[in-house]
Amino acid sequence: MRPNLLIVGALLAGCAPSGGPPARPPDATAAPPVAPAPWSIAWPDPFERDMAASETVALGPIYKGLGKGACAALRANDPVALRALLTDDFAGRLVGAPNEPSPTPGEAVQVRAWPAASDALDADAFVRATLALTEDFSSLERCKFKPFRFKMSPTHDRAVADLHVVLAGPRTDGAPATRRGTWTLEAVPAANGAWRARRVESSALEEVVGLAPRFGDVAAEVGLVMPTASLSNENVQGHIDTRTRESIGGLAVVDWDRDDRDDLLVWHRGRSLTLFRNDGRGGFERRADLIPPAAVGYHLLVVDLDGDGREEVVSTAILGCDDGVARFALFTRKGDALVPVPGGLPFPRACDDFRTGDLGAADPVVFQHLVAQDVDRDGDLDLYACGYQNRGSRRERFNLYDAQDGEPDRLLINQGHLRFADETDARGLTGSRWSYVATFFDEDDDGDDDLYVANDYGPNSLYLNDGAGRFALAPPSPLTANSESMGLTVADLDEDGDLDLYVSNMYSTAGNRIVPLAEGVLDPETYRTLLASAAGNWLFRRDGPGAYTEVAAETGVAEAGWAWGQAAVDLDDDGDRDLYVVNGMTSNSSDKEHDY
Image (cartoon, rainbow, N blue to C red; front, side):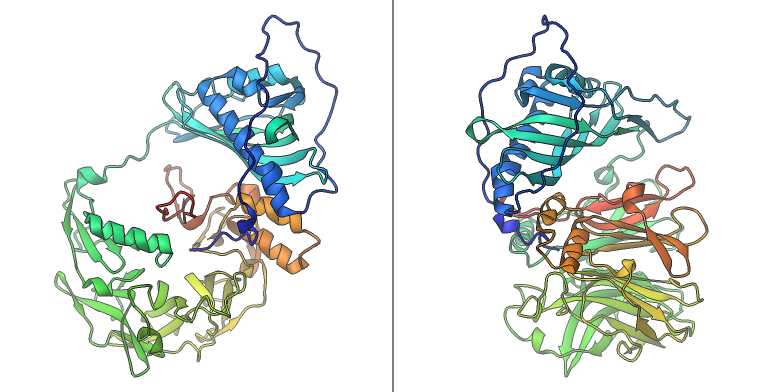
């Protein structure tokens, strides 16, 4: 959905080859080494500000040679290969002995920590200590030493990086474990463009261990299978490769037949809406094509809009546009069938976008999300649709960090009998941001529901309700900062009796690494925007009416990859809400192109 936010991404061209002279293996018979003198790693100041030089001269070889080289050595349990990555005068601080918490009966996960060590180790001792960190893994399935901060000296004779360190896999006792920490690395150039580690200092290392299996994939066993033709899959891959489609559908859990058992509705945009009916015996019966393929949008909402006790299905697909009026698809229940409501959900819309070019090339108008709320307090549900893009988007007006050429959002007020009126402008909801998802909640504790909209390519929007269902855009605040947001969850996450807000954004190691090189060069506001765009998810802890503190980093929920959506749910049955975040969506058929 979002391009790499780093405006310098094109500068990250090739990397110099790694190599260098073979290192001598550790000598187990040598006398015990003398501990190096006290030291600390100093960041280069001044530092190389040429981003291309910084990335290609040092960062590329360090990541490929040292980071990936260390992982290869750890997987092979090869002390010689690991030692070859270090200089002869190497010194490092790793971690001390881990704590050993007593397991609690019924506990789903266990956390233990290795504290940062104060004693320095020479190269051979550091190799032994590093290998010891993985000796209780039966296999090292995941290994990462990835730079997220990086500076090189102007003379290119040394570089310093902060690395995300991840070691994960099954332990020898069978329990899945993930160990995470941060290393600060000082590297110096060696032969053939390679670099060697001269200093390493580790933060504390944390391990999360799964004590009991909680989830297993049984979809095929219970009948939750979506068969697709190879030609159809190729078509979808073609759209992904050309970036004409980046999200394809969704899923809803509903009791479709009112038998007190959860069923599933699964949809694939432009292809099918499928019902998986719970048979009560641990399986599901599949019924495909509940509505025509053209009526299946990116998002579907299953909700009773006319108060008759039967759900309607609203789709973000636009079924047509005539005489300046577009129509969302709307279906109502007749027994077990979905019947189209004549005219759908109309709203004013110029129809030119629907009549130009090849409609198969890209969706002419995209709405990403629907949310239902009684905005005017008349006892029935109104609809808010998040407009994303149209054929006029991404042209001369497009600004990657302040885009205002998206499809306008729509507020449709329920008139009864499945008739709705577009009152977007009349109720103060103006603008054309690239809206992705929205939610209503009482942000300022005044008894009415305000509207929070997460926007791609620009600041988020908060609209305050005046109590009569009219809205005014709130002044800029941390809640409305710019971070390419994609998902929202409103829940009492700290169990203090009020609602907190979790927003999924994008965490970018490259962004955290490259943007600081431009400090003092970019306009301060632009610089802060770029930093925020790479910082990861937000958790706004509510301190009082309209008052929040952003605590994602300190609570450990900021870094969640290229985050799209999330849910707050008690996954371990301990009585509090956990956060489950999904990241990534599509993979390009070429490994040289971006995935999303």
